[in-house]
Image 1 (cartoon, rainbow, N blue to C red):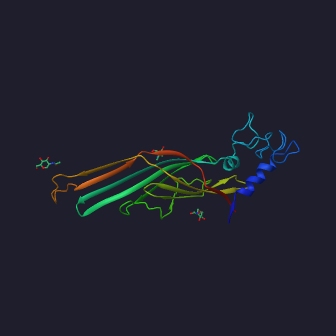
Image 2: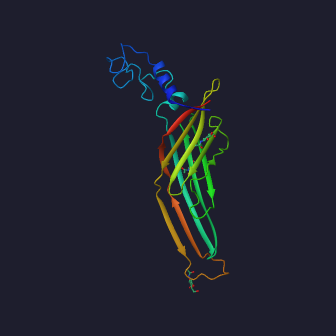
Image 3: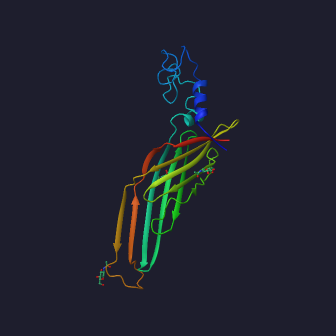
Length: 217
Ligand SMILES: *[C@@H]1O[C@H](CO)[C@@H](O)[C@H](O)[C@H]1NC(C)=O
Ligand SMILES: *[C@@H]1O[C@H](CO)[C@@H](O)[C@H](O)[C@H]1NC(C)=O
Ligand SMILES: *[C@@H]1O[C@H](CO)[C@@H](O)[C@H](O)[C@H]1NC(C)=O
């Protein structure tokens, strides 16, 4: 079962912020203010010094402006050994950091489904080696031109573990080179390639915010 995070959010925000004034929306300074926040009780990550208890923990990072760090690249080859025979594939690979559990996993998928290789119709599962216990499941979809979708669960705490599910999608706008070459005097049987094409995209690095974050119960 998956529970939307919103009720938890409201609960933790108000449970940890005891109003000092009469409060209420638009209340006096010190109480829950015009924006609904109690300004005596700053929330993370803009922690005061010394940090409030709980700042920077897995739960705190999961609950306040959570975002993954993604570094992703794409590479595709089309090799025609003869005009009629090709050997072609695409590879997407990325490193994904979850700041709540301070873990980075490396993930890759290869496809030989001509001619764009990735069509966003399939979930690929990341199986990090060695396994990362705090990251029970990570899967992704990739569209060659050029969308990325992510599904990850992560777990905070050992004694009373809390598991989050985050979903994200983003347009990547990858910067790629596309180089084609045709053998000008190809002759069958010489072993020379008839033609090649090579698409290579420089790694893109971005902060990826979930469009959905919930608890897995
Ligand atoms: C992922 O990390 C590895 C190891 O640091 C690095 O070699 C590789 O280039 C990175 N890949 C991307 C897409 O950033
Ligand atoms: C995300 O992963 C969870 C756990 O594997 C799964 O239950 C859920 O269906 C997935 N959601 C999507 C959108 O793939
Ligand atoms: C094409 O064939 C000619 C004559 O055999 C040779 O001189 C030339 O180097 C070849 N060109 C390529 C790109 O292999």
